[in-house]
Length: 331
Image 1: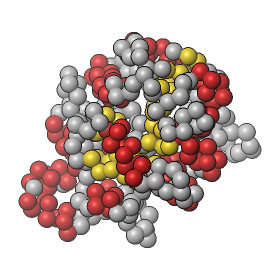
Image 2: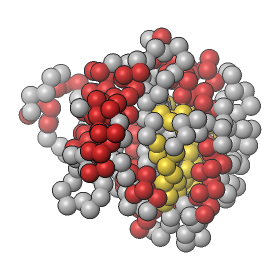
Image 3: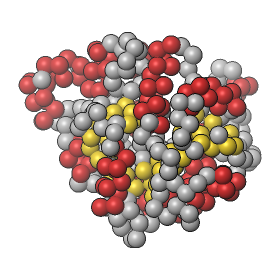
Image 4: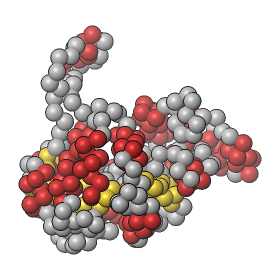
C-alpha cells in the first residue's frame, strides 16, 4: 500500500489503470459483528472483481479508519492500493453562529465546512483520475457506495454500455440501478421482512426501468458509477460542490458538456445488488428519512423526484391486486 497527500503525488504512485476504484471511508470498519459481516461482504465483492491492471484508491477520514481495513485488504495482495486522508476544509468565510441561534443540541460541537465530506472525497477522486488520464486514456473512475455488491461480469457489462453510449468523443458515464436495494448476507441474520419492506419502499415505481432506458430519469447515480477518466478533469472544473445532491450535479454537468450518461436496469441480483446494515423496521425508517432529506419530489418535475412521496400509479395499484406481498409491504 502506498500513501499520498496530493493528487499529483498519487498519480506518480499508481500504475496505468483499467479501473480506478475509489472507496469513500467515513469511519472505521464496523465492530458490531453483523454490521461488519455486511460491510465486509460488500467490500469483498467489489475488490474481488478488480485485477492487477486496476487500482484501489482509499479515501479515508483518518488513519484509524485505514488501519481498521488492513486485515481485509491483506486478502487482495495483487491489487495496487493507494490511500489518502481526505476531509472537508473548514468554512473560511464569515457566517452566523447558526447552531447557537437555532438552539441546536451540543451547539458548540458543530462546525461549518466548505463542502460535505462526500464532496471532498469525490473531488479527490476526480483529481487523482484526471492526473492519470494521459497514462490511462481508456480507463474509468469507479465510485461505489459502501452497500454496492458486484457480481462477476458487472464491470465489463457497464463498460460495453459506456462505449455504446459514446458522445462528443468520449464513452458515456454509466450507473447500474436495481430493485434489489437490500439483500441477504451470509451470517448477518437479516429478516426477510426487512429486506422486502425496504425493497418495496424504493421499488414502487413500476415503470422505472422503462424510464431509465428512455433517459427520462437521472442516469448518473451515487450508489455506483463508471466515469471515463478523460472526463474527470472537465467534471471537476464544472461542478458546483455547494449542491447537496452531488450525483445529480455531476449528471447535469456531464450532459451540459455534451457527453453521454446511461443507466443500466439490472434485473439479476447476481450481477448487481445492494446490501445495507439494516436489520429491523427502525433501520428501514432511518433509510427512508435520510433519503427524503435530499430527494423530496419537486412539484412540476415531469418525471422523477422521489417515488416515496408519490401515490401509486395505475400499474402500482394493479400490482397490489395481483401481488399480495407487494400490497402488504406497500401498506
